[in-house]
Image (cartoon, rainbow, N blue to C red):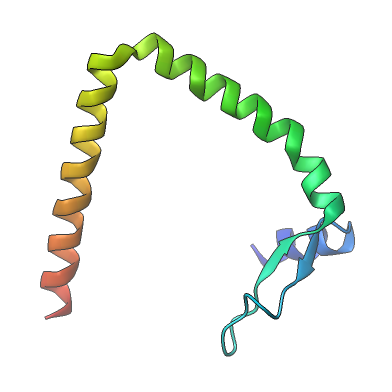
Length: 84
């Protein structure tokens, strides 16, 4: 992961953000160049996701949303139990 971030910084796609950094954790955000680079990729991905949702239809989408919500609740329960 460090190599990816280092490379993206060298290429001018990421920049350090003191506003988003907390303590020893350093935060990096997309630079203007990085935003321009990623915009068409995100637009393409969004189009594919929209198409997939249209193919699923409202009923299956509602089922999927419910299952993901149930999974999230179960995961939170297990995480809370392990912290005790």
